[in-house]
Image (cartoon, rainbow, N blue to C red; front, side, top):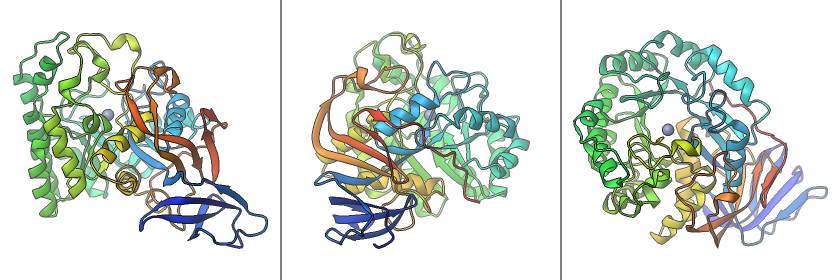
Amino acid sequence: MSDAELVMRSTRVVTPEGTRAASVAVRAGRITAVLPYDAPVAEGARLEDFGDDVLLPGLVDTHVHVNDPGRTHWEGFWTATRAAAAGGITTLVDMPLNSLPPTTTVEHLRTKREVAADKAHIDVGFWGGALPDNVKDLRPLHDAGVFGFKAFLSPSGVDEFPHLGQEDLTRSLAEIAGFGGLLIVHAEDPRHLDAAPQQGGPKYADFLASRPRDAEDTAIAQLIAQAKRLHARVHVLHLSSADALPLIAAAKAEGVRLTVETCPHYLTLTAEEVPDGASEFKCCPPIREAANQDLLWQALADGTVDCVVTDHSPSTADLKTDDFATAWGGISGLQLSLAAVWTEARRRGHGLEDVARWMSTRTAELVGLDDRKGAIAPGRDADFAVLAPDETFTVDPAALQHRNRVTAYAGRTLYGVVRSTWLRGVRIHADGEFTAPKGELLTRTP
Ligand SMILES: [Zn+2]
């Protein structure tokens, strides 16, 4: 490793070929080689020895609502990217809604990029939005470097981001398929939501009944049918209903270009344990029962579900009222996602290789960043999370870096302490301390 500037050594390096003792050589922010543990360190190279702490590829979180500009009092690039860095995430892709403006035109994308530029502690990319009236903007946004387009099939929760009806969906998806783009979809069917009992109030059971599984299942079936007909590439966001798994598995087996994500809260929290009035647990689709959760884990293990992302979607604390019908829907999970998922994964017999695959490799692949991100391998960016996997901590909201310290995980004891986070060979976070922002704004690889 004569040309290495930095050598990162650990007895447990998580690589695509498995976990092993290794020395990772880094030059100019990139991994140049993964060498035997005791390979000699070249003269002039700096050695970082992590002992038995695990070296993971930095996580790639493709589902984050930063809300900046416009709703910066909910969250912003400065706070969100610090929370992400503290949680071992080195790349995030920002959702097109809840900021003002939403990312639905090239001009709006430019505004977003200007706002993010000097605030990003980690690398940041952007999704565009597909609205009923912006079909003409999709191709220019694609050319400007967004990673794909988000659409809702039911109301989004904010007026400036209307949902697509079935005819709108056909139009947008045909356009996107025409230039080889990706459509990512919030899949709940509005008619099933309208038909469900809308009780309101503080009881979680009433909220759960208002967002039934068949709303998800129906919307996913419709999306699959459209993707098949148009040979389009689609991605199901935040899957909660395990009832949709058989049709997802069947579509994949048939060759439909379909990927699926789920989220830490669906994998680690259950409807049975949500206290009444505790709207920090509210998101759409909702956290469901423990038996549903078991099936989601099975689907991750067998590949029916591809990846795990946070869907970090904060608001100010005052919008998290004790009425589930009107409280803001969104769970803030950026800083805790790795620990939360790892805690449950290890209990279920999964390894850190699985967690790295679900939260880094597959998400990098989803957005076409797998030439740079998502693995500890030569040629990739030297992005790492250094994790003490057997150490526990109890979640204290005061230690969270996101703007409004509301969390569904308060008081939980989790496995996995992130000791430090590295971006292109630079330690950007360690022990609650951060460097000045060093993140880059990413664009889709053409
Ligand atoms: Zn979301």
